[in-house]
Image 1 (cartoon, rainbow, N blue to C red):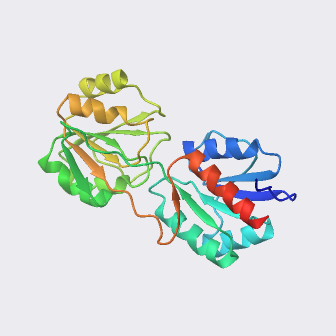
Image 2: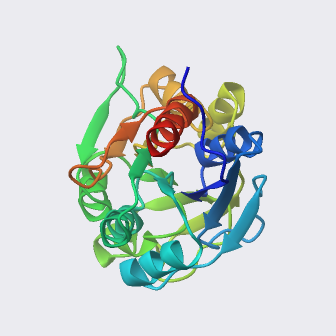
Length: 259
């Protein structure tokens, strides 16, 4: 049976997701592994994972590569949000510069079910353009970043319920109510929310996972159309794990190989 190297191996997890926290929990339980989680700092009160934690940006791919080299990182895991495309590109370039293996941890996307009335969009701007033909009272669950796409004059007749963890900053839709909340959400809670606010169209990113999926079931039951923004692709050549357990096994295989 392969034996892990005697030296402590440093794994840097680019986090901010539930999967990243679960991966850090699994890795931190092995005394032969040092895990550092990096958080972007965009949420005011993040749930901190075990192990070392750093908050803030690196200054682009060059800064990330320099940090990896300076701190002796052996393995890099990109477990950021599926829509953090810029960070994923930076991770791929930094890993190449620093000559360390890189894994992307991505929860599977959602799959439409019978009765769903989904409309695919390639961007927030494309999603905004679909809205006038779908409804007038919009439940917007794309987070506080990117609201400018829904602030155009052509959408002034629409009313938006914006749900996010932290308060959004302008530019924002002209007619808007903000609901500060954090998942996981319940099916009954989502049904009640849709009825109370008379929602007739839902906008979401294809984030995947169970924490925010109940809104899709509630929309299906209410026969409400859903605009689903497609997630950006993982950078070419980067292997992908779909679960924290898969990521742990990938990390261990890399450690065995290095030992």
